[in-house]
Length: 462
Image (cartoon, rainbow, N blue to C red; front, side, top):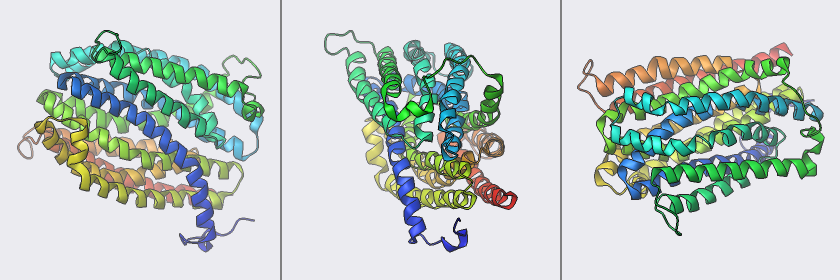
């Protein structure tokens, strides 16, 4: 019988220590996985920044396009993780493989749509009034990177399998491998080292293609021949698309994808909106977002771990345990966010200098990093809560909250303050980041409230 929640509130209790250990086993490799992915982009920013500020700005703007696609429409596939987690908690292991196969079918049209959108990058950036010289470098980067998108999105169902059955370490190892390939590949192709031609922005895109497809290929062989995954029946049969199962994934996954797109469109939209202010502002905004994104990997890992922990508990019908895991995720995310906020505030100039040596870029980036420090606490609460809600398969409510907070509050306020004189003289990047802070604050408050409502509702209805 489950222990009542009110007897396990202390952070020093045995229940808390047990929960912390379970979170650590999941969140530590998940953090390293996300960190490696983020460092791949950081590496591109650093190496392209030392090559040319305009090339760096072009790659950053390209990232503002492809990253929302990857976690937006690709975010539909993220819902497979809590689905797998609930099956694993319910000990329905043999149903996991067929679910993942259906998710792979679903990823194919998502890949095609994403590639189409990236092919329209020049048109999108032109409408945003970005400098044509910078658009040229974005196009050069995406001309190769577009072929990395299939490997990235087709890998997601396989990643969900590993994480949902509490075996995230293989994904971590493969992402670290991708990071190593990116470092060597960018150094080789951007600058033209080791006898290869100098390719600039195109070289960074080519490096991404090599790394993603290498990782995807290895992951397939690993899951195929590792005995630990045979009970999932991933490779036992060939299935045609099952409309019932695809509908189930879409029902929960569409809100996840839309929510991710809403959130990242705010951050990525900031870069595109600020494109009118020139390469220095674009680069500074990208530097601040990149550094903030690195620290964001901590609450993201906690949220991903919460989705698995809560999903496992719900699948096993341990609803009090699911509520405890939800609240623990919020507390843990808050503690970590306070620490990362202090690290950003103390080391802002040093961190900015690592990514770009241009004094003007560093000066603007340091100002924006003070906003990024505030992001950590709001993002920590939001991501911890969203992860817990995914464990309950509650995705539509969080999506509505994110849409209201980011598109209804953050973006409009940011646009008004940054590029108009309606309230004050246009504030440029500072105005845009002020709006984002306000949107994040709204989101965190409403998400925490929903965690309390949903976790209690499951217990009341059981």
